[in-house]
Length: 226
Image (cartoon, rainbow, N blue to C red; front, side, top):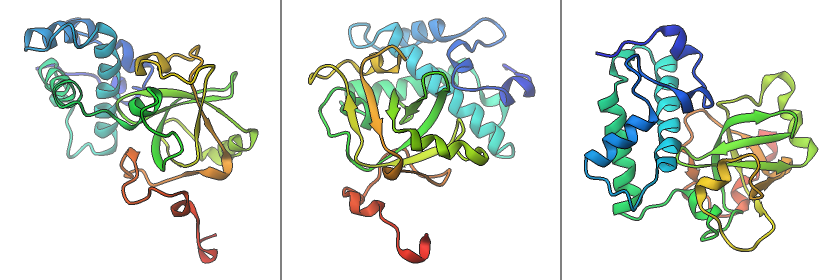
């Protein structure tokens, strides 16, 4: 059994999740080795691939423990559970060729302007940029200054979800790049978002493409909702 302190779970964020290790030292590197030992092919995934997904798996589960302590236990967070989650993602992405919304957009196989729900994973106040994720991959943003008005009153925080439409990719090339590269703040590939096409949404809104909302018209509100 691998027990973690409540303080460690409560303070977990997407940045700390990158370097998370169990008390016996088992971390992302060991998770990659366990993944390969379980049948994953090294030609299909790299250590960087595992590091990326390890980060989102740890942060998600710690968030669930904080939000629903009666349904999720710290005791359930173990190396075997993390490995099973990585194997699930490997099956979906590699064997079934199912890519997440951001992966398709970053690789320029889909339009960035579609109606999306993304999660705020990190905030860089110096660069005025947000790291947004669909739970599988992430990308940093460039935006107009108006979007920072959402910070007033603590409305826009790490962990908040945003509904976004009419976004675009800001980069120096029309060619796609590997999705893992976009997670770096130094990457030239950024998601251009606009305040008038971006709004906070419910905590339980599913990440990725919003089904049935393929048109920006769905982003409009009725007068009585304003």
